[in-house]
Length: 151
Image (cartoon, rainbow, N blue to C red; front, side):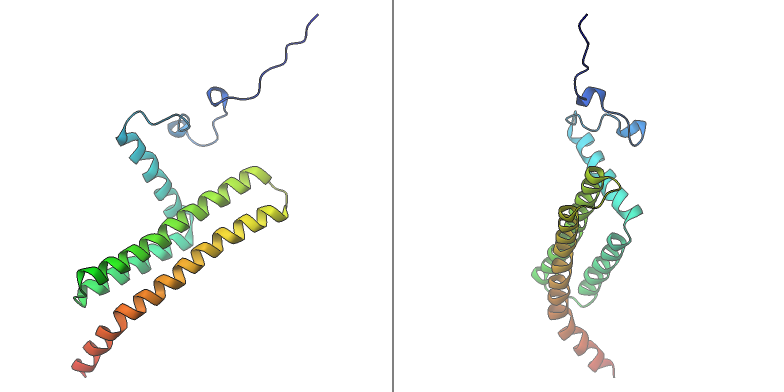
């Protein structure tokens, strides 16, 4: 009598952990629109669940809005937008890494899981500090000049 050993889970038999809508998200997107839908779902998830992502979005919008209000040169506005975009991108990567680590270690503690999470958070911090330095360098001189002319 032979024992039947079931094969390990494959993408076709993975349990549904989220919603029915995302059940087949492991598949290659059937078209470009579906790819954008999945990407937007990640951005939406981060915005809804990650306080720091919302803060970074608000600060980025403020910095870009202020740069437009102060009539910075297009290249300066672009630099602020690029550094802001990098912060948001790294925040999304940080969220992905944290989720993957949590999935892997579940409710247990592991030193390497801490290292992965801390390094991902550190990358966000470094990019945010650089972005702040860039914004201050580009925004403060015209802002101070504007304040001085109105006093």
